[in-house]
Length: 140
Image (cartoon, rainbow, N blue to C red; front, side, top):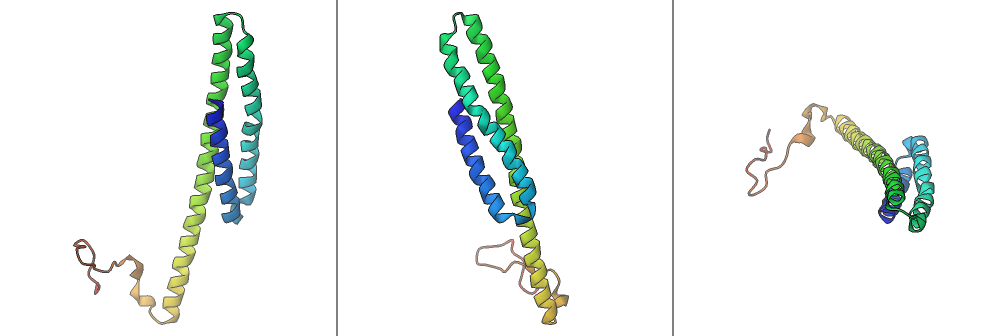
């Protein structure tokens, strides 16, 4: 259980580092998310210690109560990790969308400079390929 959480933290840390490197406009928000991830990461040794302490419990009732508490803690941490992951992936996707829109604007600027601004949504026209029956004809 704990090793799965540790693996998720490691994967999410890598994703977060990728986002920090590629989404400079969201660096402040990503730093705050990094703090949240660190808080979850810091709690892992305590959870591992609780699991080790369970070996010394005397009765099944004590064991069950402690295990239930640990399970609730793990469930909360996993939910937090999912929330963090969603936030980071949304930031990455927003940055990707921003970059695509910038390229579209740049291409439209080039077309306008060449006097071809009247072509319109040229990027939406797909070229016909052999075997591609649903492609639009080139002259549209």
